[in-house]
Length: 538
Image 1 (tube, helix red, strand yellow):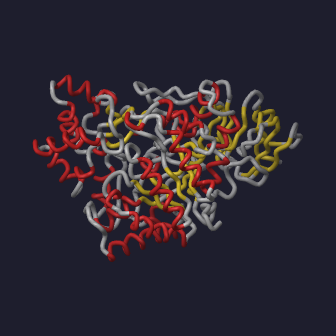
Image 2 (cartoon, helix red, strand yellow; image 1 turned 30 degrees about the horizontal axis):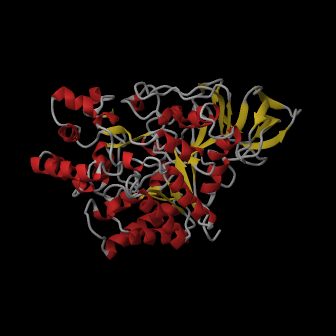
Image 3 (tube, rainbow, N blue to C red; image 1 turned 180 degrees about the vertical axis):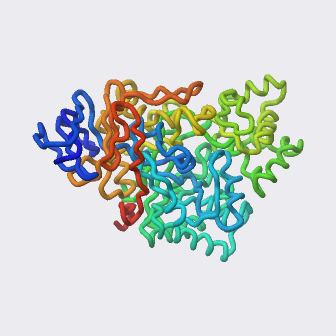
């Protein structure tokens, strides 16, 4: 007897093929059969008439390693149908933390993980202690973290001994099941690395059949060069490269999406193992300090805070920003497009723009920004509307661009329900399956499902997830295609998506009739056990 029979739904299997009416039988945590009008007996029957039955969604780029230990129910993601999250992105990971360096890592990540405790740990210990969660988790090790462990925040080429430390830590993480390495070349200390440092680590990845995901060096005025740098890693080493949250930031770069997509697609057509993800919003989020020139971080957070209090520093900042725009974001219309998302030490300021803050204090906006960074100890996270809607739709609409929220799993209550975070935490996949299909008409439903199921699984090299196939893992999402939508907004972000009635993870029902059951059947997926990233040699 089957455990569950999902009856009468419109099955969209994640391959991009046209959907069909069929019943889905689940048994022992796997898909037992897919057949029309099944007569198989089951302990439970779920009526899916009028709804789509799809593979569970794969959020290929997230930072939920910062919140899942605090919110293992993963409400904001699982309620959208997400059943697998890829974490440890943009060069940030909470492990490894060598003896004597956990406090430094906590200080560095405070703007991203303000409520997460940190401890000394190897990557293997981190994997072993990761808590049961509602979603499956794919872990990556971060380049920022490795560089912090080897050389702190020093702005210089690494010594041979320091490179050896990073290599050893990377190999230990890969042996523990890490899917690969992520980088965040847009900020310190990862931005201090030259291409050869990255290529050297990528050659380690190649030996282990692991992958490389990159928040590229620039997403504004130098975005084409930064994309080429990422593609060169695939060309030189053969490792799979995932270019994170593709965008064109800054008013000077708006309108360039078609040309940027064409350059990446040409590399893919040459056979290079390169994939891309994006989120369907014109607003990004980042630590406030990362909008300032990279030199502001030289020497670490305490040095930055001391530096920002000085008048000569602010004069230099003003000159640099007037000449080059905001680091990684380019030129913006005004500071009214930069909004406080989370400020751990100034929580009452969440939701305010820096234009408003400056006017309220009758000071220059850059002085307001510098004062805020100092008062909030460098831990402020902001929202910045820096993209053109046309570029967002062009990038999102490319059928081979995958869906990554670049966001945490949150909840409307509890510790992760604080501040005014980006709505993408609550809405990326609901927006992809709903408004992007129904209202924007960017692609048919089957393409939308493929972008966050079968396409993501192919990019990751997952062995038995991402498709509805007999024998595959029973990760399933059931949703109403006419109703699924994101409700989260910038003024009121803590609102769950609607339209998803049932979500099953490893055969266990987590969302039942739209409500969370409290189940946490997700598990850590390990490279070499649950799949192997594709490569040029594969």
